Image (cartoon, rainbow, N blue to C red; front, side):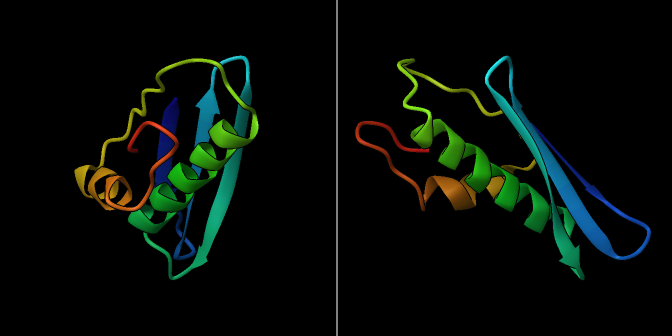
Length: 84
């Protein structure tokens, strides 16, 4: 799972996510949003895609360059047997 967030010149932020050969997406977090906001939302969307597609894999690896974003989500999300 690859995630990438970026701030725009107009004061908005966006982020994209990709799980190779399965799904990908991009979203804008809106005006006044930070890179952090966009990454959090991209991680939420990616987790949602993973749970909806009923993957039969045991593990998913998130490549995120923001430790605070990972920490926030790890405290918030759990699935049947694994903590995100």
